[in-house]
Length: 304
Length: 296
Image (cartoon, rainbow over all chains, first blue to last red; front, side, top):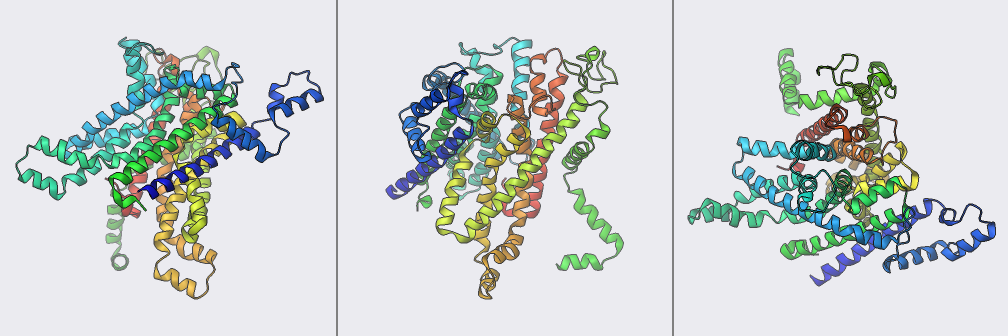
């Protein structure tokens, strides 16, 4: 197990280096940073001084090393648009995204458990068909449009919830609901299929023969084993939630990291987008690492 | 083989019945929707009632024809500056389809080559390629698109590049697995014994055996690519205006949903039905060609 964990951490580090190299290359391709900083009237000597000051006169490997050192110290540069230090900008926005996405993942887990288990228990009936249809539809409908429709039905016409922004708990309802739609279909399909597999197994039959109530058999004995495949989906769903956050936060004017990225894209604010993407990369890698280790712990066949 | 022979020997009537029985199980609605998409994308210039960017300030916010104030001049209504929604959707189909085809073509070529090399050579080459593939698989495509959008500026090329930048990874993964499965077969060992070069073995012996899986994956990614392109255009990081794209049309109608719902509803329905059809057709082809991949 220790060997597996060490190997897996080394792999994650290599992946991180690959990603950082790609971002570094893009940073250099995004244009000469000197030209962005230098005032229009700067002389050639001034430009040389700025170049030296920024360390751009050094060789590329050296520049990459400096880039890594700054990143690891949390020094991510300054936003081009609002002249604020990127680290504090992200620190300001990040909690909003974390609270939004965690609620969305929790909600989609609860709903998909109910839907998936119901569909599996009523296999082949109209309920099963309905859940399958909803899952397929959920994967196909553009979520940004769903968010717009939700705003008009529940905020504009019915007036139950605010249209955008954040502050009160009521502000959470619509963004969390629409964001949970990103992982809901895949979770539901997974739970349904793994539940079907488990319900046909010997120990479920045994539990039934013992005379346990159907609810006990399904929700305790079967579900506990059916939920394991959901672990692997957690890594994938994380990426989907990040994608979703960019869209949902834009639609609901939610002051989170996703909207920051979308705004940085429109304003062509490279330092902000570079730092956000790097941050997401690190978190995605960490989540996948944790998922793999947990999985190896639960299922010893995975270790190598 | 024998059943095919039996059918070939059987009379004309039986053959027709056989074709009818196979085609009855075809997912007809998805095929019709996708065929319509291809048709309008190719003949967009000939069938659109108006040029997609033609403004008509007197016809602003005309509702679709079935509404009381609607007119048959603009079947699906017009937007805030009087552009015909139907015409823009037809040209938007061309954008969606060409992005999807280009991205899938690029992803297929890169993924097949890398995956087959990794699966065949194994060892260090495989280890390095798989680490890069893992990085690409773990990474949300939308973020790379945003990053590239900042560096290169939003354009058709940026969208295709950004979507291809990550979508080769599932292909590489899949092809590697497939090649590793087939490479231990006797016919590959025999080819090696008679002195075939690795390139020859890969192209003439391994590729035909893994092509089914490849087609399945290609069909299944159509919907996904179209959906991401629409999301990008919705965010303003996709195809820049005034070129019509379904995603940016939804964004245009975003703040007018209570007064002019048709601006965003029809493009959304187009996205939804095309993605749905792509997924259905992909599932169907997977079940037909490669039952091993079937998931409940």
